[in-house]
Every structure is written in C-alpha cells, then in structure tokens.
Image (cartoon, rainbow, N blue to C red; front, side, top):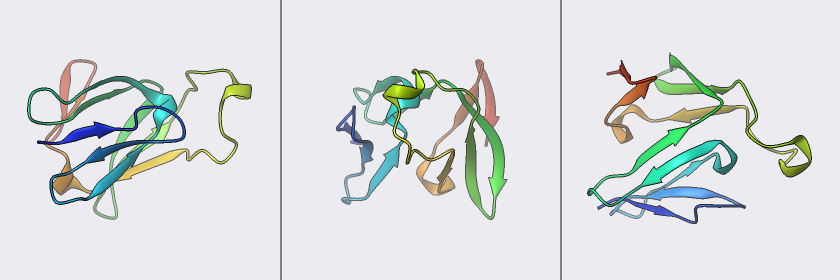
Length: 97
C-alpha cells in the first residue's frame, strides 16, 4: 500500500512500501487519497507538459494561495519518475501513458 504522508506544510510525500519517499508540492494539492491501495493525488495550478529527459514534467502555471502564504523557495517544476506513476488524467481525460 502507498501512503500519503505529512499532507501539509512543510511537505507532502507519497511513501512507498520500500521506503522511497516522493515529495509533492503541498500548496498545489487539491485532492489526496490512499484508501484504495494506491496514492491518488490531484493538483490545481499545475500543467502536465510531457516527458523531459525521461521524467514526467509538470509546471506550476497558477498559484492556489496568496503570495504571502507561499514559500519563496517553492519549486515551479515537478519531475516524477514514470515508473512511479500509473496514470495521469487531465480534465477527466487520460494524458499518460
């Protein structure tokens, strides 16, 4: 089972059974659930742009919170290893694989 761990500042992680911990941008998460034996995470303000150097690439295109509530050190790009992601759905339609 995969677990969503630490959902909130300073970080949110998907924790895999083998101990691998994948960091996610907490301030962009609009949905998270791990009750079905896998992690399902929905992002707002992020755009899936495809593969970059073999990694799934998402860009921050809109902030969900006011600037004074955001970390100045926040990343504007999220990169994920494809082997860790079962699927990507954008606006209800499959976007990957």
